[in-house]
Length: 117
Length: 177
Image (cartoon, rainbow over all chains, first blue to last red; front, side, top):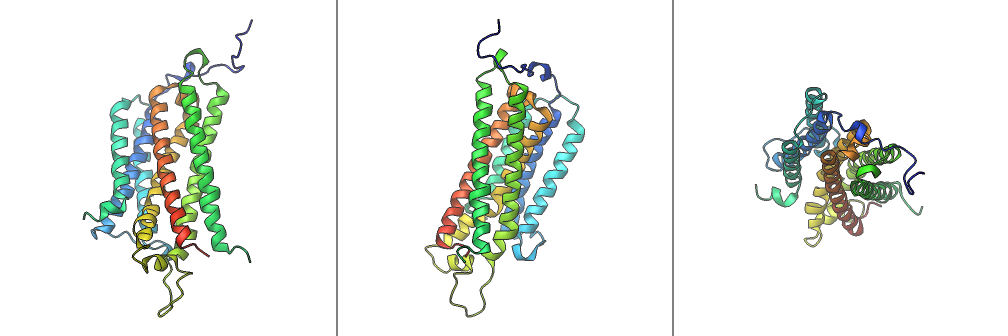
């Protein structure tokens, strides 16, 4: 007799538990690097250190800053993916670095932080 | 005409895309959290995994559309410079906000936050969508991957909520008309 309330579909989680986590962690860390790049380009623009070129005139400098950050994200993700996609990586340190980069990136896009420069 | 093209785009950006993104983010977080509490023999099925993967892809797509429309369709008329000597600033939201010390913060803080932060949300959502599609049930059954994905989606939710609120403030005082 079937167990009451049991979904008809099979639980497939256990079968895929051994899939290498490298591609996932590369994706997460790549996003962290992209987030940091966004904050970095916004901050150095406000500090007058580096002004990304305007790529679409009507939108102004934000078009260059965001495109640069997206390019940094995609390059970092691509490189990490190629290196890690078949590997099992310790997720603790990668997660910690990812969250730190995201935190710094968000701070870098927060206007009150720019006033400190 | 009841609504101009500019105000329609603003509604598509904020209410349609922003609203869908927030609802989908909440749904994804609840779905993943539900699976987390149902581990063991009652863990994720292929159907549940597929649904969560689709939800994460929807979030990423909607956020991409939102930032592209925001940056390249709505922001240009927002930041347009009024003609020299012009006194009616109603068609120039940035200049209208900066004209008064009481509203200048809506540009200096609210809109300048909106210029960059949503792009971070897009990157995080895309990363989670990639993992959702590539790993399917493993994303839900592997506690470390699932917790990290949920953390990124929670950050996404916070960022999108914040910029949406800032957008409401800006649009209330200086709407694109």
